Length: 144
Length: 144
Length: 144
Length: 144
Image (cartoon, rainbow over all chains, first blue to last red; front, side, top):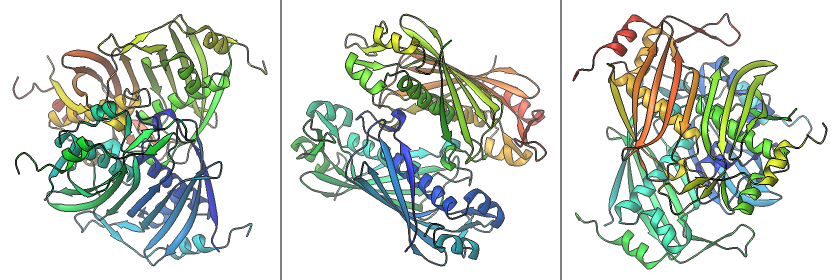
């Protein structure tokens, strides 16, 4: 059973649009924030990991969200992040957003371990996720 | 055969992250921009439509994207937007991003016509899309 | 002697640009966040205040910042916010950003109490700040 | 007499806040966009200039704006950018925003030519602006 890492954010005035609710791309920003928190909780600070392996990190292959309840300024949101399927080059993360135990939305990210590749037009190539990262992601939580 | 509306955007320095590529939530911002353009091209300026019907517009039920090629500062992107399934309360939009005819990513939005509802905790309820909007969305393009 | 309200934020990956440092407009976003915190600490939750007085709140007349030290992903920043000059229709806020007691930047906002005005082309007009707000802003802190 | 470079942007729904007007940090984003355009119009594409000189570019020393008229979704804004004082390590830019010849706001940026500096805690140091850049910025416009 994998770990769940919870990130708490507050919806700010500037996160919302003229309808008075969160402008939806902001939820993906918070998914990204939650992903960094998840890695940090696994003992894998992404900034250092990127430097150590010369990679650019984990850019997105896929992202999706299903929205159920809107959020408004000053709402406090909890994002519960869990690891989904882990493959040789990719990993999947699930983010469940709630407020006072009301489910607000669910999001999914599929990310790939990518390295710079000067020989390719877009300059990136997928690579095998380093063993250290796999170990960190799959180790039982300290409190588990 | 529905219309395709093309929105052109330029990737700015501030749209990109320390990996030097577009920070992915920005792509959803551009989907939203493309949606407004699509409505305007259908003779439906959303700002006026919202006022006329007292609705809050078309918030998201679902959003997703599949990323293939990253984008970098100063890239010029074309977003080709088409209408997918149109239901009584919801509509689906497809956004295909390309650069110099290279496919970069595809995104999908499922949006719902929503009105303020003071009787509900979250203050929104789905409603039947007004006939004027349906006509505008499904009319053949002027040049078609 | 006025109160100082401290807001803590973490610099996220998506707040930074390809130079690896915070994209500077984000600092003004955090000034806005700090302003909301300042009002809340004065017993003046802006969302409720706006509703009660039918105003649109405190849009900006002027904003400025002097940057000394850049910030990077995962930096924890403290924003110390104080009230500057309070006039009949305007108020001034000072925001001092620091990290581990290193001064990073100083910002200043001059805001005006504005109400909707359907008779004007831009739809806003300055108004006298309600007495309740003045009292809240100038009352000594509870712990003072 | 220096050149004036005009950048046109459209205010998008997602640039605006629950008051229905542009969330003010976005104006600084557009200043940054206008600065890149200004450099490009001077024959100095910043992305290439950064690579050629190994610098990080022109981060901000100071930024300020004076707001007069708010902007709303779908407004078309023209940003007229001119060079102010050019010093050995710094340059000043002025950005005047207007809509249909109505002056909306004026902004000023003071930027410094910065290079990475591994010996300093914050990793940046000011440097003399390369002569090629000074020539590009001060050459009369092609059409002048």
